[in-house]
Image (cartoon, rainbow, N blue to C red; front, side, top):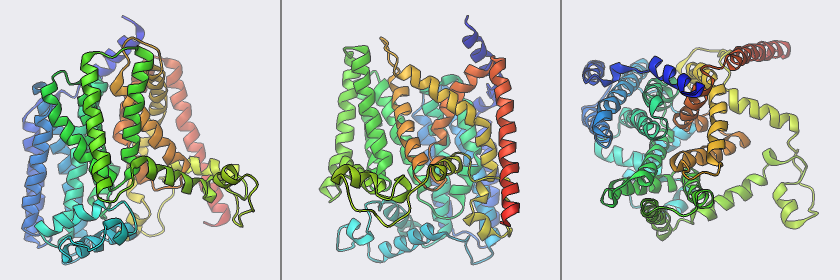
Length: 499
C-alpha cells in the first residue's frame, strides 16, 4: 500500500462521522426547529403559512435523500436536518431581534427583489412586456421565484427568508451527493461542513438575496450532470435530465454565467475525454446524448422567450468587462485596442499592477476578520459582511488544501489515460472558470461562497495528500504565521492613516 493510500485511509478513519448513519439524528434536529418556530408564532413573529413552507422544504430534503443509494440516504437526510436546524434557529433569532411587526434590515439588492416580487404579484405575473425589458436585465428568475412564494404564502418577508434558508440547507445533502461520486471517503465531512457553514447560514437566513437559490440550482445542475455521466441504465436518465433542465433554466434566467460555466465545463470535459481516452464506450455515448438534449433544452427554451443564447450573453459580458477600468493597465481598454488598434485615450485612470494585486488579496482573504465594526448594530453587521467572519476562519483553514487539491485534480484532468475521471473533470473546469472570474472582477464575497461546497472537494484531495507529509505540515504552520503578519500589517497601516 502506498503512502498516499495509507494517509487517505487513516484520514478517513479519523473523520468517519459514524453518527451520521443514525436515523435518530434527523429526529433530534427537528425538535429545535419546531420549538423555535412555535415560540416565534406565539410572539406573532411568523405567520401560519410559515409551517406549510417549512413542510415543503422538509419534503424536498426527503426527496434529495431518496435519490441517493439506500446506504447513503440516512446520511443525506441527517446533514439536511442539521443544516435546516442551524438556519431556522438563526432566522428565528434575527426575526425576534428585529422586534414585533418589524423585519430584519434589507440591503439594496434585497430591497429591489422584495419590491419587484410584490410588484409582480400585484400585476398577476403579467407585465405586458418581456421581463428583460421590464427589469432592464436578463437576470429576472429571482423575481418570479420570490413572487411565487408571496402569491402562495402571503406578503411575509420571513417566508422568503425561510425559503432561502431551506435552499442552502438543501445544499448540504447535494454537496454530499457530489462528493460521494467524486471523493467518497470525504463525502460525510463535506456534507457536514456545508450543513454547519456559518457563511451560508448568514447569507441565507438574513437579508433577501438570490445567492441561496443560485447555489441550490448550481449544485442540482452539477449533481444531475454527474449522474447523467455515471448512469448505467438508459431508462434512469430521465430523472437527472429533468432536474438538470429545471436547474439550468433557473440559472439561465437568474445568473446566466453560472450556467455558462457548467455548459462549458461539460462540453470541454467530453472533448478532453475523446482526445485523451480515444473512442467512447456505449454508456458514455448515451450519457453524452442525454447531456446534449439537456443543455439544448436549457438553451432553446429561453431563446424562444426572448433571451439571447448563452454564448452571446457571455461574449457581451466579456466585451463589457474588458472595457472597464478594472481590466485596464493603460488609459484605453484592452477591447478597444484589440478591435481598433490605436484608439483615442479614454479619460479614466488605468488599473495599476499594485491595485490588481491588492484586489486579488482582498478577493482571496477578505473580508478580514481582524477589522472590527465601528458599531455593533444589526444593520452595520449585516451591511458590512461581518456575519461572514466566523466562516472566514474556516476558509483560512482550508485554503492551502483547496489550492493543493485543485492542482492535483488539474493534473489528473489533463493526464492522458484510458479512463479520464469525467465527473471530476467537469467540476474542475467549472470551478476554474468561476474562480477566475471571481478573482479578476471586483464582485461581492458572496460569489466565492457560492462555490465553497465544490472547493471542499478539492480541499479533501489536498488534505489527503498532505496528511502524512511532514514538510507540508510545517508549511501549513508558516501559512498561519504569514496570515498573522498580514493582520498586524493591515491593522498597523489603518492605525497610521486613522481609519
